[in-house]
Amino acid sequence: MRKIKDLRPIKTENGILYAINQLKLPAQVEWVELSTCEKVADAITNMVIRGAPLIGIVAAYGFAIGIRELVEKNEDIQKAKKVLQRLKNTRPTAVNLFWALERMWKKFEKYMREQIDTQEMVKLLFKEAEKIELEDYHANKSIGGYGQVLLPKKVNVLTHCNTGALATSGWGTALGVIRSAYEDGKDITVYVDETRPYLQGSRLTAWELVYEGIPHYLITDNSAGFLMKKGIIDAVIVGADRITASGDVANKIGTYSLSVLAKEHGIPFYVAAPTSTFDLSTESGDQIIIEERSEDEIKNCGGCRIAPEETKAVNYSFDITPASNITAIITEKGIISHVDREHIQKFLKYRGV
Ligand SMILES: CSC[C@@H](O)[C@@H](O)C(=O)COP(=O)(O)O
Image 1 (spheres, rainbow, N blue to C red):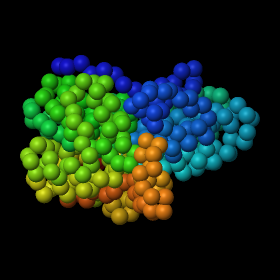
Image 2: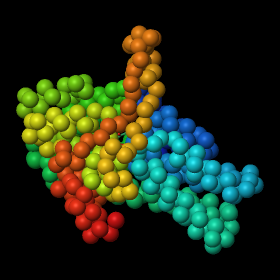
Image 3: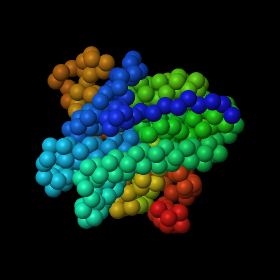
Image 4: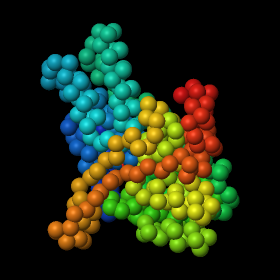
C-alpha cells in the first residue's frame, strides 16, 4: 500500500469556517474565512469553493452560520427561509447543494417544532453540517474502493475537471478512484484535461496529483480524441453534478464530448459520484438547468484578454452525457453497471437510498 497524504479543503476553528481559496491555486494556498452566510454564498457563486459535494457541504455550514447570525442579532427566526433561499440561489446545476440544504431545513423545522432553545439549535445545526461533511468523506473512500477494482494493474486514465479532495470533503470521487488505485499499488498514469475556461484540471487536479506524487500529464481539452486514437487511454473517469432517474449525467462542460469519443474508440467511460448526486425527481438530462456563466471567463485567461472585446462568447458551465454513453456509475454503495432507469431504481432501492 502506498501512502496518500490527507488533503481537506475546509476546516472549522472556534466555530469559524475556513476554506482553501481555489481561485488562488496552484500559485498559493490561501485560507479564507467564511464567517457570514453572505460570505459563504459569495464563495460558492464566485467559485472560491466549487465541486458538487463541497458546494453542498459548505452550503450546509452556511445555513448554520446564517441561523447563528439571526440568533446573535436577535432577529426574527422566521428569516431562516431567506437564509435558505440566499444559499439556494448561488449555483443552479449541482443537486448536492439543494440536497444538503433540504436536509438542513428539515432539521431546522424539527428543532422549531420541538421548541429547542435557539443557542442549542445553532449547535445542533453545526453538528448536522459536520455530519454531512464526514459522511461525504466516508462515501468518497468507499467510491474509491469500489472504483479502483475496475482498473487494470497498469492503466492510463483520462479525467476531466477537478473531482478530487478539493471538490469534496477530501479524497474525491473520480479522482478518489485514482487515489485509491494509486494507494493500492497500481501503475496508474493520469491524463488531465485542462478544462477550459476555469482550468480546474490544470490548476486543481494537476496540483492535487503533484501533492500526492501520482504520475500525470496535462493535456489540452482538444487532445483527447487523438490520444484515444493512438491507444494511449485505457479508461475515462469523471464526476457528476446531477444524475437523473434515467441515468443522464450533468457534469463539467466537455464531459459529453469525451463520452462520445470514448464510445467511438471502445474505451470504458466511468462516472463516480455519491448517491446524494442522484436526482430522481428529474427524469432526463434535458430537464436540468445548466448554469451559464459570464463570457468574460472565456475571453480572459490569467488576467489577459485573449479575444477581441467585440466578440461574444457562450459559456455553458456543464453539459449532459446520455446514460447510453456511460459504462458504469460508481457510488459509495457499489457499482451500477447497467445505466438505465430500471437498474438505477433497483440499485438505489435495494441499498436503502
Ligand atoms: C466531485 S466533483 C464532480 C463535479 O462537480 C465536477 O466534475 C464539476 O463539474 C465541478 O464543476 P465546478 O464548476 O468546478 O463546480
